Image 1 (cartoon, rainbow over the protein chains, first blue to last red):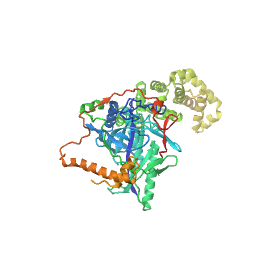
Image 2 (cartoon, rainbow over the protein chains, first blue to last red; image 1 turned 60 degrees about the vertical axis):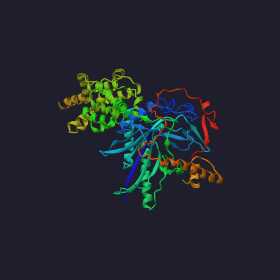
Image 3 (cartoon, chains in turn brown, red; image 1 turned 45 degrees about the vertical axis):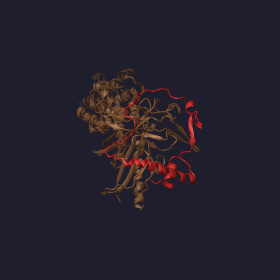
Image 4 (cartoon, chains in turn blue, brown; image 1 turned 60 degrees about the horizontal axis):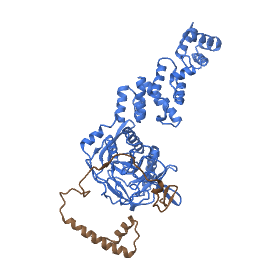
Length: 474
Length: 94
């Protein structure tokens, strides 16, 4: 039986404040274990939290970029549970009065726009990190107290693919707003999914399971695809879905039940008496709103309208802010949108991928790429030679003109010089000339190739073609 | 309000407390009378009173985002009953 898939995502995002949310320890990732702690984040008796204003403003900025309304009054609550990476015995979160509500993200699925609604965004503190050994566990509390926002969607997602697209878009928007590094591999963006199935047409939700440990875009899609299959199998066999928390095992490609802790879900929330409420005025909201940069959707639209780019190009280039910034910086030096787009999307991306690098590590400055493309357009180098120049630029960071000069790569467009060479090639290829005269046009390509070989690819190919035709057709 | 032995066991479990049968009996009675006492508040009409989250009437107390001094690893672990390689060592979690 074909069933409808219902997915909701909860995403935790670490905010990139310098210090933790309730104390002045560094919030930086990594570091020697337990070196970014103080009596407050170790939860020593008698210590009191004080809220980091920057964390509130980052959370507001993210919420506004995600089309949420900011609530004028929010309160922290204690979410009580015992776990060794949580020294206070509770997480400081927001329950009854969260920071923001009612947002959305638009994603594109097979060319159609789908709106995924966001139910709420609240601010909380992160727990420490545990490393599980065979007979004991080790706890590092450097991360305890790093500010987090939790972004909860409505159950609007209808396929594992949509879940991945939502998450990719969420990451892009948050990167644009610069409130988080969004590094899934470092855990600064983490995703849990709730999923259930129901017969098409039904308006009742089926029993859901929760999948944790979806730590990459790939795991989100694969983990959910597996769970869809598993639930379908179970329902087909007349079994009931058990509401439980599952762990995604990336290596085995399966979801496995986590040890039952249904008791622990009794969080006994109550207002945190050690923190005062946050009152957020319209004025404050507008001040934060004014710091939000152009976001991916409007940048996409502008790239299509202003630069005349195909939608595909605009989509790829605006998916990440550093790429879009790089692209626009190149345009300043070479105002040919499509040519620059091709070099960035095809050649640059290929080299970055092959070398496992990020754009930030790239040695080619936008100015240098712009200059190189100009050299092609002016006919100084052929597009074929440009590939060699580009690779050299990527390796050394030198400018295109330096490389062209050092390696003697300037395109030969001198007609006299090329004519002599073409004549020689014609004289040395009687077979090809005969073939050509007998109507085998392919023989021409062979002779162009010979000229290119003689000049190590530097001959201007259009000119070689023209000269060959002149000589042969006479 | 009557607190059952089951309720006591549930709450004790959440709080990681181990109680013997006698203690459970005793606490069930004591918790019931505490809740009965608090229940007297329900006699008040609070229809038009907004929920109280705090007994002091101030808001927006913030600190600025500046990094201060943290403890050294040695000091941070000084009170730990068990440690290893700079980590707190605890009984197996998973």
